[in-house]
Length: 147
Ligand code: 5GP
Ligand code: ZN
Image 1 (cartoon, rainbow, N blue to C red):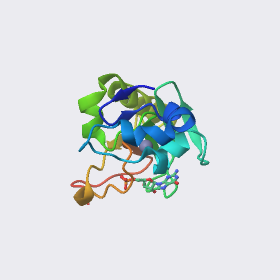
Image 2 (image 1 turned 180 degrees about the vertical axis):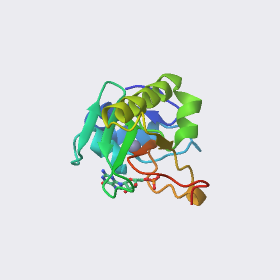
Image 3 (image 1 turned 90 degrees about the vertical axis):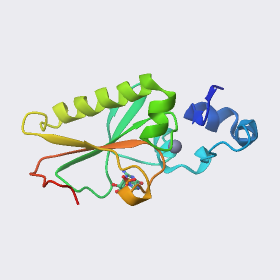
């Protein structure tokens, strides 16, 4: 099992060490419970999703409630609560997530016309799932400033 702060290698956590992981975290650390994390479950194949891209570090799947003709979520397979946690702990994962986002935009045909990569971070920005995810949005015109 690999631990780096609150980073958890999701599949190992679930399949091998789920009962002991919380105890292994340092006292006072942010204990986001990966066992209950919706996107960890999708990454592990425990919940269904329409996957459009899958590689060693990242997964891309269609948003359940799309806000644009292209609306794909890109996650790291390892659990981080938000993009700030990912930046702090895993530069390789951060780059991989962005590479996947670009690849998705190209594959969806929105790279040329224009697209957005959005990380809602925290309550006031409307983040509802506490597992880092970038929204790849395209296929229509977007306003600025965003709502
Ligand atoms: P946030 O509001 O945290 O930035 O984005 C969370 C996104 O996850 C929302 O756009 C929401 O529609 C999407 N979402 C929530 N639950 C599920 C799910 O079970 N499957 C998929 N594919 N998307 C989900
Ligand atoms: Zn997670």
